[in-house]
Length: 113
Image (cartoon, rainbow, N blue to C red; front, side):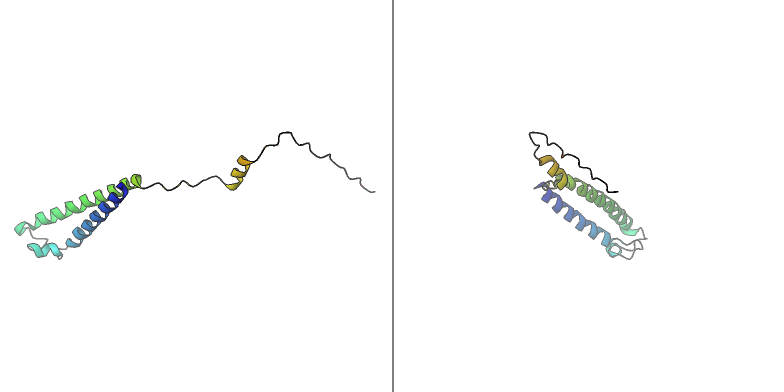
């Protein structure tokens, strides 16, 4: 449930960040210039608008990064994969004989000369 909440918040913040970035234009020709003049002029509070957009961009990007990092801890845990190999499992699960097995008698081959 919390993971879903994190995903929704991440999507909302990402969408807002996209909108804020689209409104900005460092050369003064973006949408911010439509709301009161050119970005390079300080008449009519445009400088305040640019400052607000700049601060919002940084704030939203920090919030987005924090949400992404925190969502990692809220992610549902998938069934743990057994990291041991089949050989290790076979060794651990083998049956140990009750009596020790005697090795076969060593045979020597007579060499023909």
